[in-house]
Length: 427
Image (cartoon, rainbow, N blue to C red; front, side):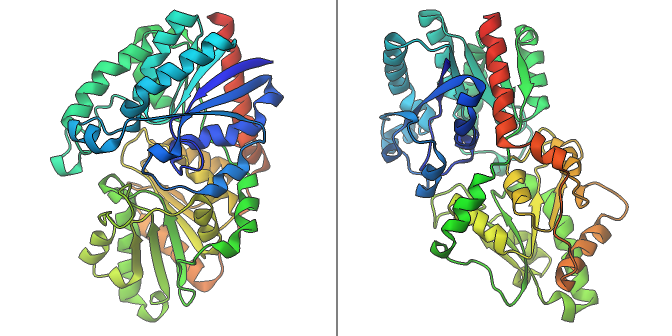
């Protein structure tokens, strides 16, 4: 049995998107010939929401090594409040101990806290252990360079320069790449020609069926966020201006419907939940202002506070229909599409035409997956979806069985392990 040491700064019960690949893969590593151990930051050193139910999906006996981190109070004032900077030294010390004591065949970074990935080159040089990086998002990106300051992330000037400096430190020695988007890999290959000669695979997050049972088993523990007197269409996930191109057509269709048939469309309500990464109670609405501009705010609810992962699944199950708006970034692939698909609820998605999400959704057999610049007739297509929900005539989708298997967490784990095997063979 080969051994992989997984670096995942955030890990259950911390509820973040970037630990989901590891969490959903752990049950399947051994069946593919790999024994996994995880090094993560102790949840006590993070300030992100926690969902204790997430731990129910972790296989019993999984070795999880928890490390300390510097406090955020002072480091954030210097521009280094990210958990990746605060935990870097502690990862270095702990993994040094582990690599000294036992033989590991591979180190696997699966996180969007990319700065810790710079340790890969150090461990490779010192312990001769190759490493793989999972590119769930871009690390150094040009996306925000031409955006107005109000659309740029906090402390963008510093983070842009640090990322531009640190990314090559990791890429110059990496043994393999995994990414949710082929575009991310192609950009890196253009930037660092040596990457054209290493194993690289586009592997999305998978659909993890056991999560639905966990959510159902704890259904009575969750507060309902939806008004049952309406027909509710729900989106749960981050907001932001980069999603406006996908959301505005839905709001325009709703406005037209309310004007044409107010008695019918008065029954419809759109929910946007968990739209801010800010601590609960401190988030700024980014979706509701669009509704107010169109005078449809009585039919749009934005809840900026994030909710637990299984509360999310249960809320999706309670909805009459689901809506997934995508980013205007053509490289963006929404990993959250798979929990939506698992609910088998009527679903509509609007993405950038170049996003791989549209192709994946159509592979499943979803009819209502559109590009936001799809003309003519996008508003009519959205209106048709709204009417099906309002009339109760939306059939529950039956997805292509081959796509269900292809994008299962079990199959995604097998593909990761196949890449691991290539990396240790070629290193």
